[in-house]
Length: 283
Length: 260
Image 1 (cartoon, rainbow over the protein chains, first blue to last red):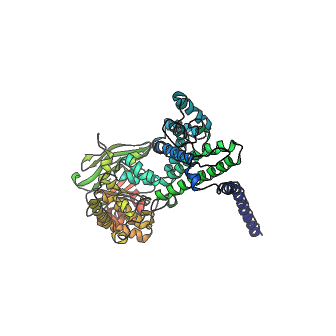
Image 2: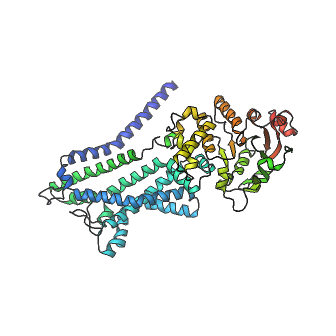
Image 3: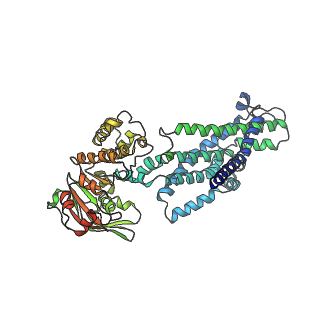
């Protein structure tokens, strides 16, 4: 009797979980399907390598946008990743005081900051003052979005490293900074990388701050003080044009953006995969 | 309190009126005890009596806990490791430690685990590292079991092997003293027997201090035994006489299982 009712409850809970999973996945899957369905026919060698055509007449390509997005991701990571990781290490290992708590709070606020506000800030600081849209301004805005995410996830994953590991390193007569970098951070590596990848995915899709900092362009990168293009901007501008050729270009650009983020994810995972897999699964 | 009648210079390390606190909690009270060179000294006592704290004071690991502090002195080769200007890091290189739960570095191979202490202190020469890794693993009775798989993850070994790996890791930096904090409490009897055998061989070269709450183990492996209770050193003497003929009533009651 009770056994049967337990089994029914078990089945019920299981089905409910399955149902919720399906509900959560449907929108995600439908977006992917829709983007692939509309975008795949646009993709060609020409689309990937040439500059945009005349709106409404020829489709051309989105090469400047691809180049710009990769440039921005690279430039932002160059500054954002070391800064974020070191800030996270500081908060996790030395941040148990008033200063650390304030930094942590501000960092959390910054994580949720509307990106358009970040765009306006950089626009005022770097665009208005120099009268130039530039990749530098774009990377600066994206860094402000990236750093808090990397900081937070680095701190969280370093906190999962058990104290016994720190003790072991200290007992070997290893200096604290050395142990923090080579033992503790190394143990937390997989979590830190997850954070970095999350932040890259996030900045790859940011549009609002880029409108105010790199502006968008039909041409390849020419100098550090000229506007450049980026995929989200290309998609945004195309979507507002009335003709179907521009819409076609937008779908193609959306597909390429998704593929770039996906490739980066898989690539970084493979390149940084420790020989012994994730540290978390072993502890 | 009886102490072995040895001139003080025979002690590799000894404490003088050592006190230790965690915040306001006074966990060690005026402990004066010596560890003789090339002997095994066991520290026994019920949980929370300060055994672990005592050995963590001997390599200045105690002070790493926030709020922890000490008073009194610890003399390593008759020089105070709590003296002014003494770098705790250099003390820890001379006094190695093995912990209760095997704690190999999870992202490192067997080889890198053993070499960690040298590598992270700047040794880059592969010949030196190879030699140190082999010597330490041999001393820890682990070489024959892992020599074919030095590239494997340290955490892929069995619990007993992991603990011997941790011992090898401590030996690689060539300390003078090895402290063990209940090294067998997470191990099965066979792995425990291996570690005990290992301890007997280590004392030929090192001074060994071992904390254990297993009285039989203390009787088997040690030359001298100290009994701690509520942060105080109740009795200290040769292991055989302490176990067969304790002078303090408290020791006798503990040894016969009346409390603790």
